[in-house]
Length: 223
Length: 162
Image 1 (spheres, each protein chain N blue to C red):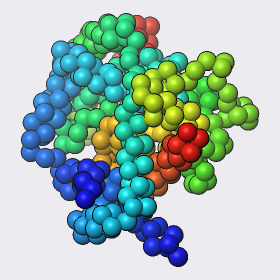
Image 2: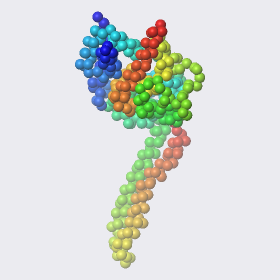
Image 3: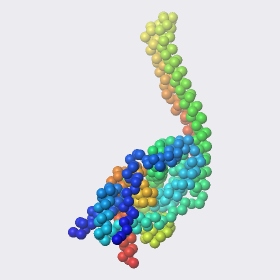
């Protein structure tokens, strides 16, 4: 008899979300909210240490490139310092942090006119379509044939197989995947970060997964 | 025909991965996966993709943290320095508004006796007080915060780290 796969477990957060935090996590978020209201630099340093890696990863998934990530990380933390009073501590800190990073990224992309993260651009049904990855009307190409950040970061065989697909996947699908499976955010939290309905979040996750699954199956057949 | 049978279950697998399965759906999926090798493979492949996503490591640049700390310290100082100035502006504006209201009420009350002393029509005196005293004072009070904030903002821009 096969063991039941752990992926079918319902995350407890899904049951208790909707604006109300679990009691256990609430004190932490309240502490963070209080520190941000007081512009407590020591607390900010601790948050930087704790979330820096995750922020970098999220931004790389969002941008699909490494350049500008450092600047955006720095801007995000400065924004956290300046707008910390708007975090009320009633929900988790991560979605609020990622929402700030996302807004700054959108501003950055608009300035550089690289590509769009607008929600209207995700209904094509083709997660690989590059219609939102354009620069001056031409498809965006990376500056050189250097390996993508995903190829450089792949540490396992499967990761290496997925790297190319991730590179060509639309940013909105990559974003949904990283938020759900790496950051362990609930659908509701992702919807809040991205600013789209829950159904759109689900559909992005399904399509992103389907694209990556196809890539792994293809690799399996090739072997 | 077989596709029809598996498709809803694969949809359930997708939904379970997204974290949106109810308890009853969870049970029916579990039962189906125990009996169906094709759907079990679909679930295994999906899990493999998710595990594959965990196989990336994106180290932050070594000096990034130090840069962020330095930028935060600088910005915190600027915000700290701007705080008393802002408080002063708010106090000044409140004081100006209170004085204006008190002054205007006094002027309106004194308008009639003054008109009697100077042998003027009370209605004209009231209009004069309104037009020459009350309205200009209120307008000045409303624009005062903008006037006071203007130099502070230009100062902030010069020293901004953003």
